[in-house]
Image 1 (cartoon, one colour):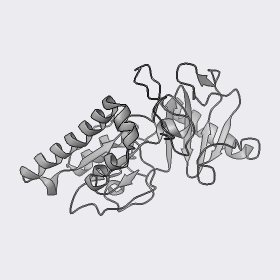
Image 2 (tube, rainbow, N blue to C red):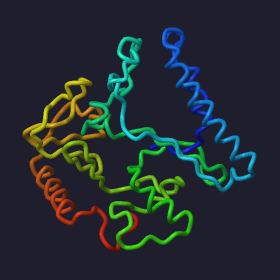
Image 3 (cartoon, helix red, strand yellow):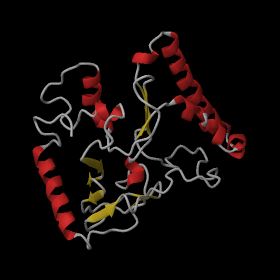
Image 4 (cartoon, rainbow, N blue to C red):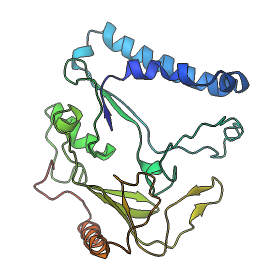
Length: 250
């Protein structure tokens, strides 16, 4: 996740798109320009209303990148060397991090200092976090997987969650530096998009600190970590929730 000022970073985005891509694909150029313009209109409206100091703006994505998703927009032909997922493996629909690790930018002038954070957070945590920031009380069964990470959003906590369950066809569990993907029988690659889905007949274990691209499966080298994480994932599945009845924050 990234915590800091949204607009300075976002405004620069259009300046870094290659001129060739803009000239050869006016539809893409129009979409980027429209995104840039409308975020600017939103922030201008907040400022004009005098609400900048008490308005949180969150800019994020619902999933990782996919190049050819059936839109016939020549995205593949016009990549021009661009790699949407960067060093991450997979993409949209994938249990690998390119499917679930997304941009997350928070803006709240006067309350959040510009900067970045490596804290682990999920969009599901917005339920409990925004409730806390606005003085709302959640009921026992509201947001059963949502943690109050308001301190993380404000940049006061650099750790965030101690674990996160992800679902993309199969289930995965992140704890600290480790990511465990449970065995799955689905296809290894999504035929229409060419994206690796993360399905494998055996368990997968990746060190996200030393191997952000999830290239080396360490399950055979660390069977004790696999057993521990598989057991915790099974407990969470059995409980039907990842937050205990008393827990609101890590």
